[in-house]
Image 1 (cartoon, helix red, strand yellow):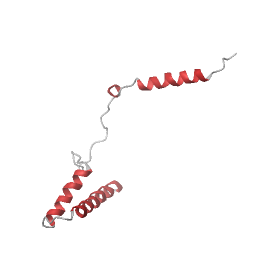
Image 2: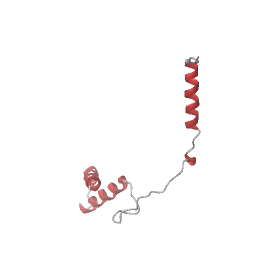
Image 3: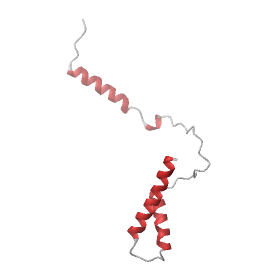
Length: 92
């Protein structure tokens, strides 16, 4: 006849199972190189979006003649341009 499982048995099995997950370290996980070749029109170095926005906002500031007081406007305009470009690229 089969032994009835108790709550303690279930908890022990869960603990053992979780222990197996914890034993796996990130350095043990095999890192596979990407099998997809980069597209020829994609940049080889990816620039974080915030840096792209900052650069574009500064360009807008310079185009305005370096007049102060429009920092937020420049940032929001740059953000719309950069994110719009990325959204268009994602749908293409």
